[in-house]
Image (cartoon, rainbow, N blue to C red; front, top):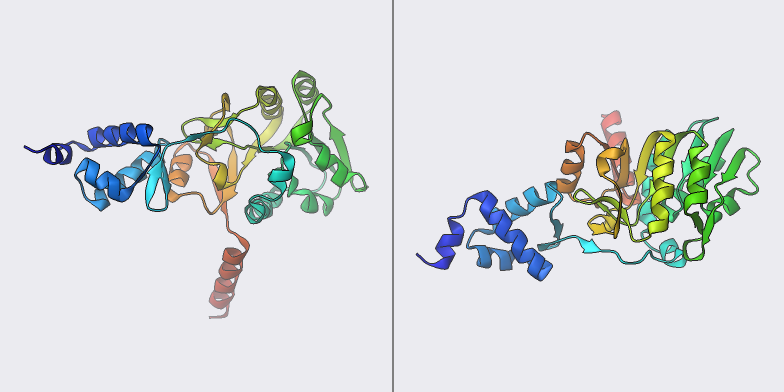
Length: 281
């Protein structure tokens, strides 16, 4: 029996374990490469990828699959402001449905959570607690919003406060909803960070809120930092954009977490046109 025949005779679990071993050696492989290496059809490889992705062990890319990538440093604030702008706006459009007058919310430092500012300014009587200096600055002239900054050690690169002092402030406050940002998240690792100083702040925000919401773009999915924060099941809701692969979305829903996939503007406009036609018919 040839090696190819032996590989083709593997049971699915054995074949997927071999696929993962190949991935860990190569980081990224195409479907064509895997069909040759495993001696199975394109359809079988795609099914295996879907299973592994639903389990959070691998991540599909156009024409192939990859393993999770390590994130060693947080992007600088200036980099964040120009990345995934449409995706962040789409996520904010979904998240703003959770806002109502006179509620107390926590906005974690980040440009994704910061995209909620226009909706916050349109409300009345909101109290916003944040560790983000940019968010505070954007709310300085908003007389209808009470803003509380956590204080703490300043992280210049991301224009936010981190560390024990910021966490202690959060532990003394109670919020209705905590909107948490993340630069790295996936099913296998949960929410992680390359910055140890951010861990305690995010944990304190999660411990002090009635409802926890992760706001993160799909481009951050499949990345992991050095420090674990919480598994994804710790969140009540995750809001990301429609770029998240369907198998990953299924895996998150398997955890019992409510998942919202925010459509981008063109998709949203198309959906609205479709609803209008349906209403008229």
